[in-house]
Structures are given as structure tokens and as C-alpha cells.
Amino acid sequence: MSTDVALRVKDLRYRYPGQHDFTLDAVTFEVAQGEVFGFLGPSGAGKTTTQRVVLGLLDGWEGTVEVLGRDRRRWGGEIFDLIGVAFELPVGYPRLTGREDLSHFANLHRRPCRDIDGLLDAVGLADAADVLVGTYSKGMRGRLNLARALLHGPDLLFLDEPTAGLDPVNAARVRDIVASERARGCTIFLTTHDMVTAGTSCDRVAFIVDGRIAACDDPRSLRVAHGERRVRVEHRTATGVTTSTFPLDEASEEFCRLLASGAVETVHTAEASLDEIFEAVTGRGL
Amino acid sequence: MRTAPLGTLLVTEVKHHRRYGVLAGLAATATLWALVLLGLPADWRGPTLPWLLFLEVTAVGFFVMPALAVIERGNGVTAALRLTRLSPGLALATRVGLLTALTLPVALVAMLAAGVGWSAPVVVGVLLTTTLFSLLAVVVVGRSRTLTPTSAGLPPSPSPSSRPPSRTASGS
Image (cartoon, rainbow over all chains, first blue to last red; front, side, top):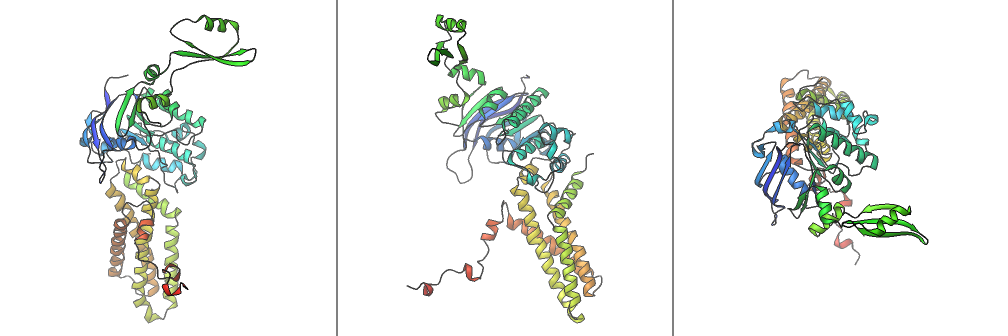
């Protein structure tokens, strides 16, 4: 991964007009080029507001925001050829087909765009390419959002809840797309409640609560730091299946004996999930 | 093949006009106005024409324009368009220009039916009024995602069902 910074946010403060409290209060983080950065937090924590500031959809903020090496305030419309955005809420012209919708947006970029059929196939909408967007389900519109964001091969991709409303197969498809975009060198800013996606796709995650960053690290380090160094074993006994836990720091004779006995059914390490870590760090649930 | 933004906007607008029934509606009103005018005595047609044309441009300006804007905004398209290099001015000008141009054939049909022939002042009046009403409608609708806030601001209907109950009718 390159050490260049794709997105730098420092001491970002923002208060909505008429509000007393800051929605964002000294938010600071950096996203390296080619990194998948997860932005996690409960509703109202400031995730979308941060994204809207970075996208240039909100004015009146304080602090420093640099996007692709340039101060956000110094970017003009050309930035939109370099970034792609997939909104959480369904977006699309209801009376255009999926193909027409993507074609419309492709022609509004001044950068060579990808093959629309290939994109529709990648997001699992090939069969619905010539169906009106207004008849799409929420999940299909979400995948159309993703295809629209990927149209012009952006350098920086903002994905807002990309797996919301998707079945496991399509959620896995989205994670594959995130991985392939990362392999292409694209930087991805991922806002999500989906801990599976955050845990498997993100190089680093930041927890935001009440407009402040509570923690920022890679998921593995967070799991190790907040989990128990134990292994949980389910094994057969004369009375049924029993669960036993053993410390990882020392070789347990009993654990070795169990493994050798052939009675073991499952073995799990007891590292914490991202949900549990979030709760431990912030005192709040997701 | 990549198309210029103006061409793309025009193609999409025409598709919307066709699929939302705007073109069919304009064709229907052109036919209706022609039948109405032809059904009138010859000396009434000229004085009636401006009223029908005013009705036409008002409908386009205050119904079609806001409806298209609200549909677009309510489906998140406006926000998505803000994240492209499309100029909002170009988008607005294209929509207003096309709607205005579409009122012209209706006006011409009505003028022929009224027997007034080609009248440059009438044509210019139709085009300017449609443009003005369309722009005014954009301001009135503002940033609404639905027409509810706009319609809620309208004066109450005088129909009996919307009148507040009368104290004398309470039967107490």
C-alpha cells in the first residue's frame, strides 16, 4: 500500500444551522491511498455529515479536509471525475431502465467510463438491465448505486451502507467488488453497520460516536486488544456436548488430551467481534 | 459512445416526457383546444385563444415542471447529479427550454384552429410566459422532496368537506 494520503481530515468541526451542539467535534483521521477505511458508528453519530463535508455538500465547517492531496475548498467540479459515491438511500430515475440510468450518468463524466453491461453484470443486475428502475427492489437500487459510483473508475470511492438490504449472496458480491476495487488501487471510504463487511473488507476502521472519533485501528489489532486469549472447545461427552475454555497463553494438558481424543466437535478462539469492541470502547451499541 | 452533457440531458428529458405522459398530454390538450375553438362561433375564437393558451402555459409551468423536479429530487437523482460535473444551470435551462419548446406546437395548433394564423406576438408571449412560470415553479417548490409542503401552504379549499365544523351545527 502506498503511504500517500488520499483523505486527510483534521480537527473537523461542524454544527448544523440552528443547532447548539457540534455534530462533528474535532474529527481527525487519515485514509491512505489504496486503503479500505471503515467508518463505523450508530445513527446520528456524524458519519454521513463527515461524508457530506468531504464531498462538498456542506459548507460552514471548520478544520482541515484534504482530498487526493488538495484542500477540499480548492477543488472545483473536476473532483467528481475522481471520486465515486454510492448513497445509502436508493437513487435512480424511476422511468429509465438501469442501463439508461447508467448511460445518462456516464455521459456526465469527463473521464472514460467502464462498460455498462460489464458493470451491471458485476453487481448482479444484468438480467434487469432493461427494466425500469422504478420497479427495482431496494437491494437492486442499492446495487445500481454501486454501479453508478464505479462507472468512471474513481480513485476514491465513498460507499454508504453498501450491503444494506442485500441478501447474503449479493452482500458477498459487494464485498468482492470492494476487494477488486482495492486491488485496482482505489481508496475506499466505507460507512457501514455491517460488521462482517467491516471486519473482512476494511484495512482500518474508525469508531465515531457523538461526532468524535473514539478509536481508529485495524480490525485485527482491535480484536486482539479487546478479546480474551482463550480457545472455546465443544466436545462430546457421555452426557452430550460440553463446552470448555482454555487459555491460549499456556499449553493446557486437558486441551491437548481433548484434541487427541477425537471428541472435539468445534474449536473457536474467543476474540471479540467488532460490535463488542465498539461497545467496549464507546459504551454504546451500534 | 460518449455524448455531450447537453445531448445526454435532452435525450433523458425527452424519454421522461414520453414515459410520464407529458408528450401525450400536450398532444391531447392541443387536440382539445382545437376542438373547443372550432366548436365556438367564428367571432368568439380570437378572444378565447389567449385564455386557452394561458391555461396551457400555466399547466406546464405549475404542474409539469414541479412534478418533474419533485420526482427527480424524491428519488435522490438531484443529489447524485450534484456529484457529477453537470452544471445545475445547464440542467435547469435544458428542462425549461424543452418544456417551453413543447408548448409551441400546442400554441400553433390553437392559433390555426382560432383562425388567427401566425402571430409572432402570441408565440413570443407563449414562450416567455412558459419560461417565466416554469422558473417561478422551481422557486415555489424549492427543495421539497414532495409536493406536500407546497400544497399545504395553499389556501384551504372552499369545499364543504374542508370547512371547519360550525358551532351552531354542533347540536349542543
